[in-house]
Image (tube, rainbow, N blue to C red; front, top):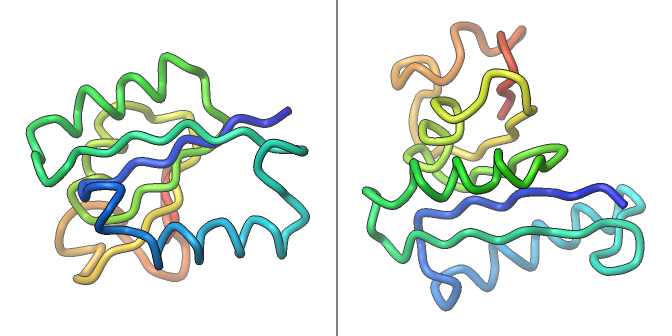
Length: 112
């Protein structure tokens, strides 16, 4: 069963809509948590200093992909691995913050 890493800078209680949308997207792609995919959740609870350690935990768990739900989470995941694919959401300019160098052809292991 594939293992997905979910990395959030927020708290679980602050993210119900985003988490529901994430699970719905997985379901639409044919993945149902507990049935044919497992998800490892890491919540920084608005303590951005925790993100590097949380990202490293996901890498050590050998997740197949990391879903990073904010710019700080995506940057922490990027620093933690160059091989595990990272799908991220950001509210700003992914190029300006250094996540990717090109929108039409994201480089490395990141896409948004």
